Every structure is written in C-alpha cells, then in structure tokens.
Length: 305
Image (cartoon, rainbow, N blue to C red):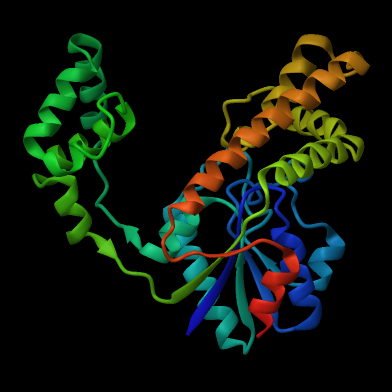
C-alpha cells in the first residue's frame, strides 16, 4: 500500500489541499508531520488545525506534548507507522500532511536505531574541542570514517561529534552503523510537494503572519508565558515567532507593545519565516522522488485520481 504525503514550504497551502480532500472523502485521517503542532498551547503561530477543521477530519500527532518535552524524528517515525497501522485496520485512509523535512525523510527512508550511547562520550569530545579545537576532531573523523567526513563540513560540530561518539561507543564507523542499525520503513510513500512561485509564496507568508497577529498571537504568547514563564529554551519555543514575541514581552511588558513594536515584530517574524521557507524549498528540490504541483487544484486532481 502506498501512503500519500502532502508537503511543501510553510504557507504553500498544504492544509487547504488536505481539508478539501477530507471534505470529499470522509475516510481520510490526517497524521501531522509538523515539529511544533505536537505541543499544547502553541496554536496560532504553528498554524494548528482549528476545532472546526478537526471536526471535519480526525487529526493525529497534534496537542500531544507538554512544551518542555523534546520530540524527535525517530519518535515521529515510530508513532506515525503505528498510527498508519491503526487507521488502515479501521478501514480508513491515512494522509501525511506537514512541512518538517526531517520527519518526512525519516518516514520515507527509514530510521537509524543506534543503541543508547553513554553521555560521557559526548562530554569528553566537547572537552577535547575546548582544548584542541574542532579541527582536531575532524582530522580524527577523516581517519576513522573518511566516507562520512568528506560529505560534511569540517566546521559542522554537531555531525562531527555524533559520528565520533558512535565510533567510540560501537567501534564501527557511522556509515557502517547506518547499515547495521537501519530500520526500513514499513510502507511505501508518494511525496507530493506544492511548489509555488517564490514571490507568491513570500506574499502568502507576509499575509499569514499579519493574520496570525491580528487573530490573537500576542495574547496566546502572553497566556503561554503566564503558564510556563519566559523560559524560551524549552523545545516548543523554537517555533518561529514565539521567542521574538516572548522577548518583546520580557523587555517591554504586555501592555507596551505599541504600533511601532508590533510592526517590528511582524517584520522580524515574516523575514525569519521567509528564510525558513527558502530552506524548505531547497530540501524539497533535492528529493528525487518528489512529485511537484504548482497549484492546489493540480494537486487535488492528482490525489483524487
């Protein structure tokens, strides 16, 4: 069985396509492939489905986590496959919808299930960077896993540390570990990407940020910070816009976001969202198996056939 995925950059119209399909086919259930819709309270800025939209179609993997809990691509892979099994067993049709590229890649390509690694190995590698610099670790990686080392930047400390900690723990290169500990996906997927003209996409982003602001985003962040404080280091605050709004609240107070500061915030969030969309577009273009549609209508025709 082949499962459809609807994806694309933010504000490209993914949800609109999904809801029209669900309106015409009551058996469809949506599994969200969004890194931040999993969190409670973070609704407006993540474009979380409204209660009316959830009434139209059953949704999964939204509002399931406290904002302080990390959610990973690995967990998404396991939970999405479990949900697909359940949905199919009930005679319904799973539809994956979302723009988090890492989640989609993990779902379609499989999961790297490496055994748990002692945290002390990573800490030791970080100390070595402090003492001798990152270049010394990269040189070591070239020796133990040249195939992987030449594919990454010599300044990519996250991947360098990851590769070396796997080597230290398992005594095999990361490239070999990926073969040994790789879990293949259970299903086949059809990757459908909405690809809009960049100018049109950026205009949609600007309008959506303005819409979010005008529909209570500031009040939502005030409510969130009242619940959990101004701890913007928690995972959910990585969602675009939330840290910026919380920072303004911290600096100026909730009663002092005037028109000038409002416009500053909207421009900052719009700019960051456009940059994020550009990165998403780059990722989607590099997916050889992706099927691109330039309009909502074209994609609906494809998925309805």
